[in-house]
Amino acid sequence: MEPSDLGRNEFRTPEAAKGSRFAGLPGYVIQSDLLKPLANTQSVRDDTFRIRTYGDARDPGGKLLARAWCEAIVQRTPNYLDPANTADVPAREMDGSGRFSNSTKLSPLNLRIRKKA
Image 1 (cartoon, rainbow, N blue to C red):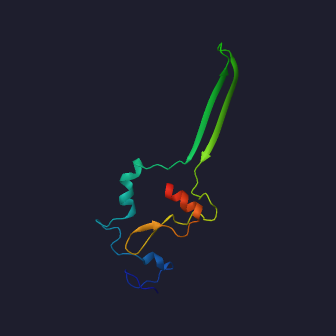
Image 2: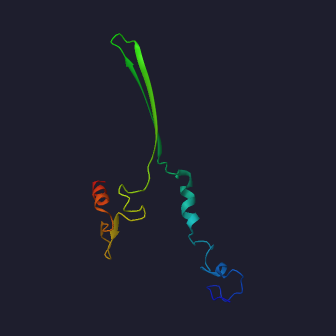
Image 3: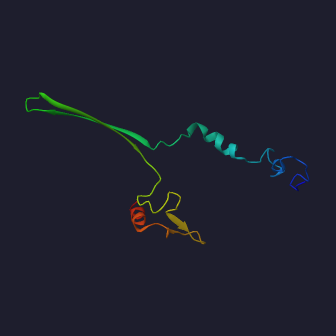
């Protein structure tokens, strides 16, 4: 038996009794209370882009000499330029008083790129 806010229990899944006894009562704010009003305006961020271009080459008389099409699909990733740092290394750190500074864990190249951004 595990003690909880709801008293002692004999549940097969004792985590079912964990949490506040007030959850679900009117006035108790849960995640969906905050997110539901925002649902209509939320969208997934798309960091993939299709870039298309087209060009003609013409002689001085306007006669078409050549045509070219080009297409590129570009996807932004969270990786640093220098692979010495993985994407989970923070670019900035916060000290005990809440002030931010550049991370000391970044390689010199990634730190230089970070300062320009």
